[in-house]
Amino acid sequence: MSKATDEEDATPRLASSPCGLEGLRADGTVVTDAEQARDVARWRKAERERLIQERCLLPVSDRTDRTVLIGRQLDRLVAESGARSPTVSVYWPIRGEPDLRPWMRTLIPSGASVALPIALALGEPLVFRMWHPECRMARGLWNIPYPADGDIVLPHIVIAPLVGFDRQSYRLGYGGGFFDRTLAALSPKPFVIGVGYQSAELQTIFPQPHDIPMDALAIG
Image (cartoon, rainbow, N blue to C red; front, side, top):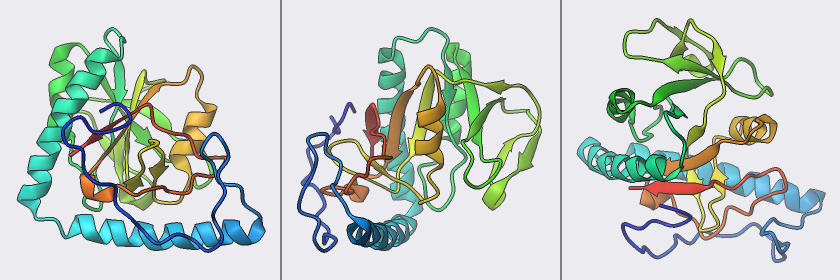
């Protein structure tokens, strides 16, 4: 979906707000001082833990059905991106994330290439390497698999897993800043699609100046 799901118009999830966060800039980012920044960080940490726990408790069959719905939206969004024979960065699923590995396999016969992100070190941007079903895999930070061989590539489309999201398409991630740091460094900037479950929707994530909104969302 572009900015909001076209599958259903669910009521936004409400969550308790950090104390004192009343004012937003015109671009939607929060005006903060040091105390407010600490409040936001604590609130995000609590929401992150709650949302991860909730999605891990979803029945496997429910997650599978939702991921099929997400895949249909991704098919449309990739086609509408305008990129010919695009390189699409997906991700290796962890902690109850939508498992897009079956969808990854469908991209290659369609003429697209698939890449996976690699976290080389804390505080560093992600890099991307081509993936195919037979490629040799290694394990990086947090034991996440990635292609062990091949050149570093620049994807046309990046699919970013969401812990939480809001109607302005801002993303709540795991807190390491990898995707925001990466998107700020990439040139040209890829088309970025956030992927997650409808239950992860928040009224706002209280975006900060470093947060970068997604170009589109695929929500199941």
